[in-house]
Length: 507
Image (cartoon, rainbow, N blue to C red; front, top):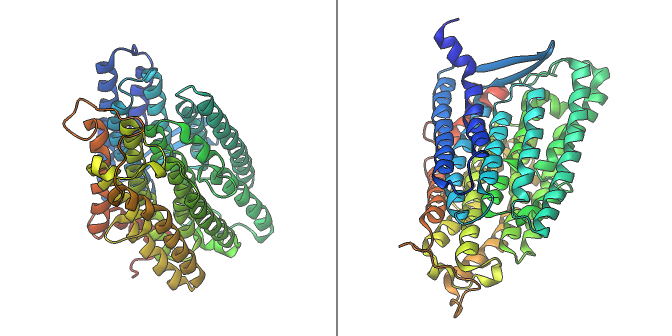
């Protein structure tokens, strides 16, 4: 076996281990040994980012990267790089770096930091495993590891509210995992091993099996819909907002909800195939569920005074754009849904970083407490403004690109009702974000803040808390302004859509 072949064979596994091994070592670090823990954190994040960069270049050049380990005859654990996996694994690795920096600053004086960062790294390893999973069995394994690794993060603070939120999260996700397991086992009994293949693996199934395939799809959607927060499976998400801000950022932008949305893309495109799914009527079911979730989440966000809860219901709404794009038969809408996997991630992590800054620096947890906060924390509020306007869909921020392609795709597919959903969602987005921006920038500040913490820093807050949202806000602008450039998320989504629809050119 040549060295090159060995490298391409083990590179996907090396990416998973680059975060797994530092995470396991962090558990052994003494609580007071901050330097060693930070070294392990940063080594893992930078090594993962480096290996992902190599993988991106290799996939772009047409290389084949696959790790395959046989568990028992006929059951393989497969890690494979393709264009869709690269979209998700790149998002995870980049945002893991900025979230790690943020978490180090946020938890500077907290307790149980080794436990936190150990599970934090395991959570990222599971997310990377989900992104690189080459078959449905591997996806299921890492999907359930993600559930178990995230539970201690939600419960980290140890308060009664945190424990309750973590138990609700675990109850929902375990129930979803059981549904997913039943669907995966049932499908395997019909077809044998289910590898992810462009344009799907089920297109030649006999008509007599179609009713079973419909039932299996519904089970898979139920299992994935819990983490993707599809209504009515979303109840765990607002309850988990008791977790620290780095965990909220991880849940909403990098790991859990994205794992569910990514799984829906895999099932639609690479298991059933989008055309076969449409033939079975499954895209109509998915589109209806996504549309209800988009509108419900936005309406509920309007009613929340808690800033993190408002952002949580915004996530319920915004993540379903990904499923909506997959439900519209056509490459343009598919691009909009897939690129929103990235765009929503960088916008939402910006918003949660900022919410954490307000809470940690000023004790501000509610929208009603945000009068004049822009004067006290201008850089944080500027980053929040970029993220919020992007969520509304204001150009040239990344969110505009996603909505534009979803709208064009709806017109291309002759589904005008999608335009109504997008228009209503945009108005509701404006309804729950613009009042925050008005209060932050134009209302006079109070005489004192709820609980102001003056850091020993020349900035408005600790540098480790300030720079991550500033960086991700800049990424929101770059992703929108340079959407047509090579290697942009939009270009990768376009490449994926071409392959899934078997097209060479389309407008």
